[in-house]
Image 1: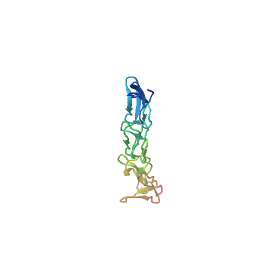
Image 2: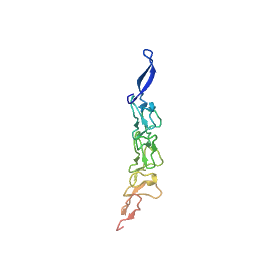
Image 3: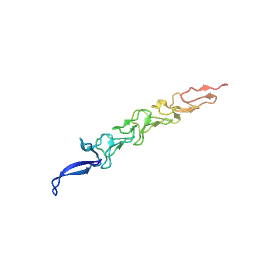
Image 4: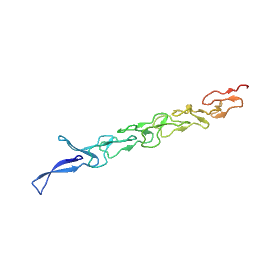
Length: 182
């Protein structure tokens, strides 16, 4: 039979008995007729077919997965996970310092400046305490949060305070020092 269809032999009451008919494979299967092997076969895991009569299955796009053969579609990766390549049967968890808030993404994003994410499968990052930031992106702990330049972490208090007159404070973990002439 033509591609995407298979030949079947059926008994016909009105004629001489046997006849060959082409039958279209349904949307969850692909048809093959290579002489030795003939039939409608389910798509393999991580591939899908949505249209009847196809001769090939298609890989699930990046950001989606399929772990069931004979599927009519691919599922979006849940938040906190991503699938970087097409044709995968699972999504991987976002690692520390990264997050994925939306489904159907192909990669996890690094946490923004002033934010951090610890653990895995993060759907968001935590903000640094007020007055603090990180020295870049992709940090994994609140310990990575430092005071902004011009401020410092006061002894015995858990917040950043402005530098005293005559002191220099470069911020981001630097010690404050007396300016020249003080």
